[in-house]
Length: 497
Ligand code: BES
Ligand code: MN
Ligand code: ZN
Image 1 (cartoon, protein in one colour):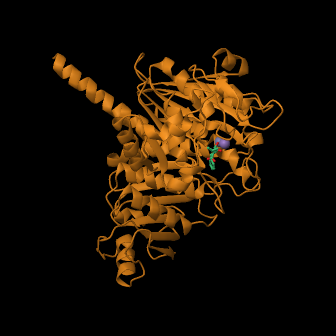
Image 2 (image 1 turned 45 degrees about the vertical axis):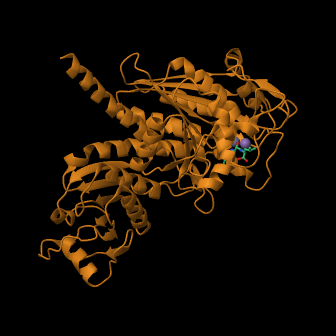
Image 3 (image 1 turned 90 degrees about the horizontal axis):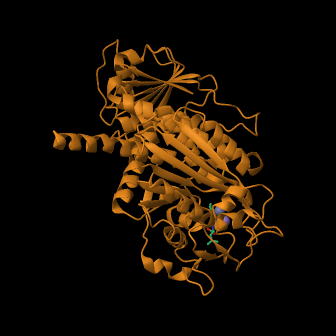
């Protein structure tokens, strides 16, 4: 999909040669009724006759309205114009513009005050509404909307939001593609190849390690999960170097279980197919790197993806087995279905070598997190207030929300065992938190955060599929960390002067 940013006055909107207009209308729209103002006239009349109600996402779909070049014009209310309202409004508006004849579309901000976050939210909502997975369903109708004009009063005011929006859409679609693929079309080897391909872009580098190298590193915990599968594991190490040499990177770690049967602690048959999404964390890390390749910000980022299948087999790890992690800590595997933490813990230890500014792991880790937060917000855990605040703010800005959950040490009591340093599961209570407490044991050497995306990475039901989250959140978090750096440099220069 091609996006284009254009300065457009309300009067110019009617002359835009597109197939459809989606016009964002504020609570109190301009009321000019002059003849050359087809748009303000249409809005004023719609409001006057109560055909366009007040309230976010209330809409009126018009066909061939007088004075417009576009044959479909949808007016949609955006309330206060916040990014959240814009997202809701565009999602609703796109629902009224599904005709296959619409190839060129305009998102019109000319009646409201456009913001960077609002423009980005509109672009993402538009992309989400027109996305179509086709890789293993070539008969599906691919996206018909090819070109999207973002029309705002002054293009210069939101240039940055527009650029970030374009990159975010690329990243989200990359993540959706890989998460949506069935497990036989997204093996650890294939994920490694996708990462390698990304690694050929400027500023990028990818190393893909196999079983022998992972064994040499001493990742006994990761290896134990992969043992039940004939698919060889992969440990993907990606570098994006846009910042100064030697400037400490942010490390992103993504859970890459390409299929989770539960292993010997096997899952019930119903809905087990959904466990192809268990590499959603990995997909979001790959997607974030795809977005970085577009934006080329001045930061350094490392991406780590431990990837394997979790399968039952004669070779598979058994409940009660004790394995030794790369950190040296021994782990009693009481439930082989709690495998995400077993592959992540070794990646968290590996992350130490980069002397990172912060490490953020992303994982479809627990059903418990889904029960706690549903699909609206991802679960957030953080070892420092600063990191928690930054990730919360990034979620708000990108409209990719998360919510902080606690890490009190008392939650770790259930992980105690007589047979190893730590068990891989506690009781059922507080399952998202006890999983985070397990991970925290391996992340003591740097500021660390964990995002549990079990509820937010994919949707079930009729709209079954990957959401591409939390690419928006991660991208915003990384870009904000770049913005804070030049400021620090300036202060230092001023002091030196
Ligand atoms: N991949 C699952 C978590 C999951 C469940 C994600 C449902 C999305 C939807 C994870 O590996 C898992 O099986 N977790 C167990 C942990 C339990 C055994 C302590 C769970 O949540 O039931
Ligand atoms: Mn599992
Ligand atoms: Zn899993």
